[in-house]
Length: 218
Figure 1 (cartoon, helix red, strand yellow):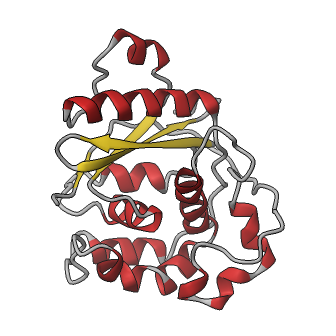
Figure 2 (tube, rainbow, N blue to C red):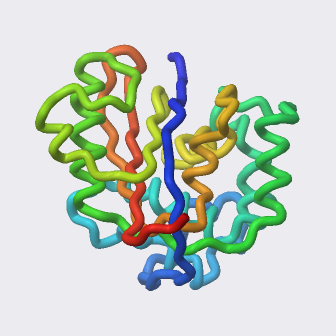
Figure 3 (tube, rainbow, N blue to C red):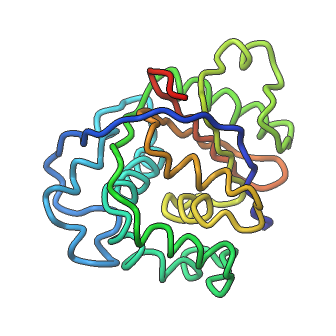
């Protein structure tokens, strides 16, 4: 199965606060380090009560929030397993993988992303319609999807269904010279994000992640 990521045009914005915790005792990254079981990381599960998201879509937000809350710990514990999680990632690559390690090892914590129904409607419409037609593009293919379009940054990932695998591929951004997905996922200024997954005619599966912020910067 081919795996592909698409570069998105993105804008910047800002935030500083973390979200609330929940009662879950384990996190999606528990297998990589017991440090991820500390109660503070449960706050990363901001989509726990978002009934419009599937369990897998909630996990995508959970994993990305954990990477944003503690980039250094994510770099130390999860990134070394990137090739095992996704064979598409070349961990010997200086420009992509190793540059991500260098970046996350020095990054400060970012605000947690909260799910948003408008972002989800935008992402879901595009995931379903592009998947049915086998299209690889950010361009909306129907009037309905154009009306629902709601994002300031968007990532599209093809061929992977595992939540951590999706996030790792977007962060490493293999063969995407602009590093557009990495820049969006690790942007300090986005405040909202909702992913949507669907079947894809050519790649088996597609995940669209639509990001938003409520204020203008720069």
